[in-house]
Amino acid sequence: MNLGWIVFAAVFWIGAWGLNEWLVRLKPGHVLHIRTINLAVPLIFGLTILVVWESVVHGFSISPILLPAPSAIWERIINSTPTLWADFQQTFLKAGLIGYALGCSAGFAVAIMIDRSPFLQRGLLPLGNFVSALPIIGIAPIMVMWFGFDWPSKAAVVIVMTFFPMLVNTVQGLAAASAIESDLMRTYAAGYWQTLIKLRLPAAMPFIFNALKINSTLALIGTIVAEFFGTPIVGMGFRISTEVGRMNIDMVWAEIAVAALAGSAFYGAVALFERLITFWHPSIRAG
Image (cartoon, rainbow, N blue to C red; front, side, top):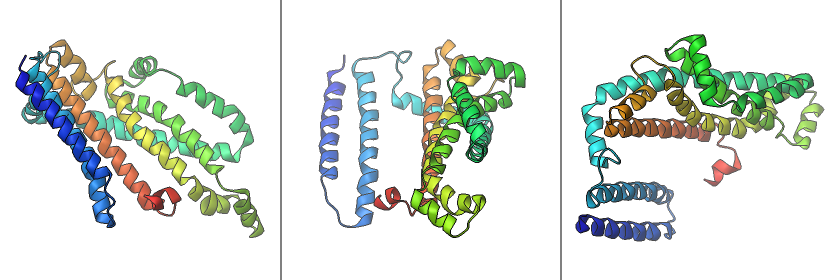
């Protein structure tokens, strides 16, 4: 055991903790200063985790097979960029995004149909609840048999995973308009579609974007898990499963890091788009 690394990790953690405590207690008046602090606090926390991780690995001489250091993972990312990029394209840009778009679109369209038809509301919602309870490890092999080993079978898994969250949130959002607002639209002799477009869909936007944000993470997770059950010799899930067998754990962590960054960036893009579309909502104005 190297005591110097352990002491360094403890001192760095305490210093970073104190710095973050000082930052969150500040009361800046300028909006730019507030946003800078809101960005700095998670960055400092994330950097602290990486430093402590590196120090603990070296301090306790942990085998890279059990837990590689962040520096080793970064070196693997730099040296394996072409492989990581090919896996990212296969998993995220093909199966993930296409499945996400189709699943969310289908869930939204069916929600409009359910809202229009009480029969579908009573018959289709319970069926959607049943589909949402199906485990990925049960769906993925079936989709591989139906659609083959390439990305369409993974996109099919993502469609199943993202369909129900969009369906439920949209149905709930369409019911969010108040009775007074609905009565006002009837007073103006507005029809169903006019009321839907001008009142109920805007009121449902926070619910719809909530589903989009949830599905942004589900899509990547579903694609990676589905790749464990059959895929061409490319893809994040394929790479993780094969490199674990080869004991190349640094490559496994490199794939995990890329997946985490991609998922976080995708979630952030959806959240930013939400702020642009629903700028009028109280939760957005308060932020």
